[in-house]
Image 1: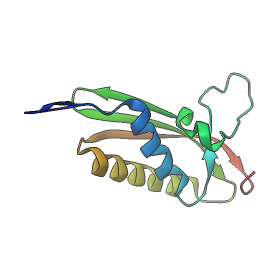
Image 2: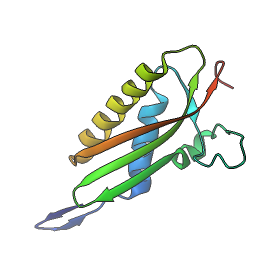
Image 3: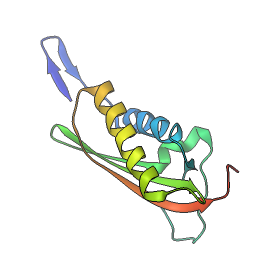
Image 4: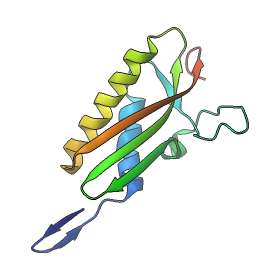
Length: 116
């Protein structure tokens, strides 16, 4: 991602996904991260060890696009929570990496009553 006089600095997509998923899970109204595959028709909330699977990272040139697959608490303002997630993830990733985040796309996969 960055070239210095001492060599190249690269941050893996998995590391970026860890940053993003942590920011999501700290956001109000989020029950958890979900798989992006809805083919089975069942949304599964991911366990803490696999939260990164609910995040897709696309790195192009010097910017990042992040897709998040989340489960939100039923009865909360979905659009407001999604915007808060976008802001939190963008801030966290840009602060950590000093690389601009072009987009944070929030995909609400399910609504749940409280944390399971």
